[in-house]
Structures are given as structure tokens and as C-alpha cells.
Amino acid sequence: MYRTALVTTLGVFALAASLAAQSKPNFSGTWKMNVEKSDFGPLPPSNSRTDIIDHNDPTLKVNVSDDGAQGKQEYVLNLTTDGKEVTNNAGGTEVKNSATWEGSGLVVGTKLKFQDTDVTVRSVWTLSADGKTLTQTAHLVAGALGETDQTFVFEKASGGAAAASAPASAAKATSSAGSRANYSGTWKMNVEKSDFGPLPPSNSRTDIIDHKDPVLKVNVSDDGAQGKQAYVLSMTTDGKEVTNNAGGLEVKNSASWEGPSLVVGTKLKFQDTDVIVRSVWVLSADGKTLTETAHLVAGALGETDQTFVFEKQ
Image (cartoon, rainbow, N blue to C red):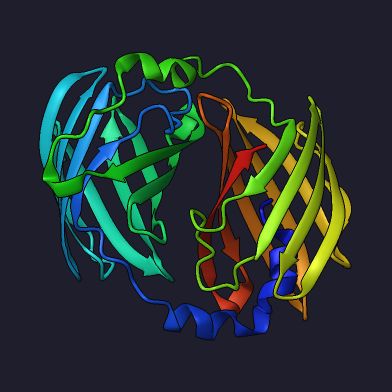
């Protein structure tokens, strides 16, 4: 699911050229947060949020209207996508932002101080193939307070009209951040909603998951650039590293909980290149959609981000 076999399919040797050639999306538009599909981790969810983005690369301006735990707030974030750090004021807090492209994804960095604690956030913005969904996957580090992952799903508002936002009650799954998801079921990949970055997409994929925590077993059936492949991934959610065979490739996997979401790590060697993948699995509130956001590092060949959307059968 975090696409270990993808490394076989992608041909890591072509990664650097593919990254350079990847087209960059434009994020302009009015974006309404889908609270139900978003995952706030252990932090309080927003009741509603709307971002109006004006993107004329390298300039990016975000007008934020948020109704959350601190009440209603409105502020503006100004960024440039050339990696330069700029200072903004978000809800009365001074924040330093930077933004850079990684393939088709925009990586937005945020630094701030909260109650004498330094907080850093690395957020990856990806746009769906149809341009209607903006997904932001964030990794937050707050010193001795720990780390957490979040996923924010925004849907484009048609014609700028105020589409009905998700009601506050829709946050029920995220507000119970202590509960851990169960991923058991048959999951079919929605290829159109997924973002493969610069790598070749699958034609189809189905994962059958048997999850009896801490044991997790995934039967993968994938039809991709290398043809049809079937393999099994077995792991435990206690962080222990195990060895699997994915499409003829030896991979080392680990899995651990961060709030209600599972973080799956993958290590392998492909043509003398060490490849590392960090994937966060997020289950929607209704249990019908599994979203996996993956960050892939292939040594000197570069990095890329991917988002895989699975629907329960």
C-alpha cells in the first residue's frame, strides 16, 4: 500500500529525470475543508475552514478563515515557492514559512514558538488529477511534547459559492483521537483520485487487509507497469522491523501508531540505491476510505511524495 512494489515498477534509475520533468500544479481557488475526511491527530479539530488561494508561481497567497478551538480566526499567509523563508502572522502568532517544489507536490515549512516550545511543521500539498481535491499531509514536531501527523482534505468550491461545509458533528472521529483505526477489509485503489507523482500509475490494485492489532497482514494484487504481481506483507504495529518479499524484492517494514493513524516504514535496496518510504495511513470517519500518504527518499536520485486512495468494497 505504501507502494513497496512501486519501487520495482517505477524504475528508480529514472526517478531523477522524472522529478525534473514533472509539471507543477496551480492551487488557485476557493477550498473548503472536508472535516470528516481530515485527520487532526490528537489536536482539536476545526468546525470549518475555508482557504482562498491566489497562486501565480512563485508567489502564493492564502486567505484563511478558520473556526476552531480558539474561535473564529482570519489571517493571510504569503509565501514564495523558491524556498525563501518569510514571516507571517497567523491568528496573532508569528510564523516563519517556506515553500519548495518536490515533483508535483509543494512542501510548505512552518516554524513558530508556542508556550516557549519550538514547533516545526512539514506539510506536503498534493492536487488530485481532476483538480478538485487538495490534500495537505503534515508532520508536526513540538520538542519534548512529541510528534504527530495530520491530513487535511480540501474540496474546491464551484463558482466560488459557499458550498455546505462539513458540520461540526462530522469531527466525531477526529475528536476521539485516542482510538486506533482497524484497517480490515477489501480495499480497491481509486486510481483517478490517487497521485503517483512522477512514477508510473497502477492500472488497478486491490489490497485485502487482515488487522488484529498488533498483527497486520496485507494481501496485495497489483496490475502495473511490470505486469500483474501478487504478494503478502506481514508486520506488527509495535514498531518492530520485519522482512517481507514484495514482487521479488526484499523489504524491511515497521509500523507504529501516531494517534489514530498508522505510520508504516519501508527500507529496501534497488540497484545499489537505498530507498526509504514513510507512509501514513488515514481512515475516514465513515470507514469507507483509506488514504495513504507516502514520502519516498531514494538517495542521490531525489525524493517524491505520493497519495493513494483506497475505497472499501
